[in-house]
Image 1 (cartoon, rainbow, N blue to C red):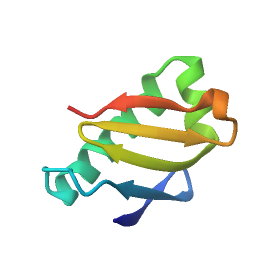
Image 2 (image 1 turned 45 degrees about the vertical axis):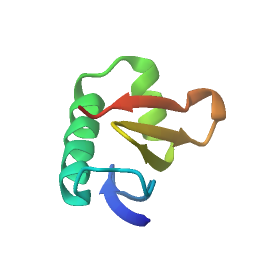
Image 3 (image 1 turned 90 degrees about the horizontal axis):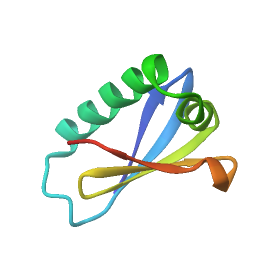
Length: 79
């Protein structure tokens, strides 16, 4: 399943796997809260990933953040 969130003045596609057991709205709220927190308080490498973010993939309790450079992509725990 695919949806879109508004983050850092961009529309970012978010892809969900069919095995997610949490409601999509709750997961999106956790995701946006975590992203907002990390863009304000995260380390430099994380901020670099967030500024070049192109898509997000939700797998279980983790969000895989895909950036323009594959070396900047990382996983973020939601729970």
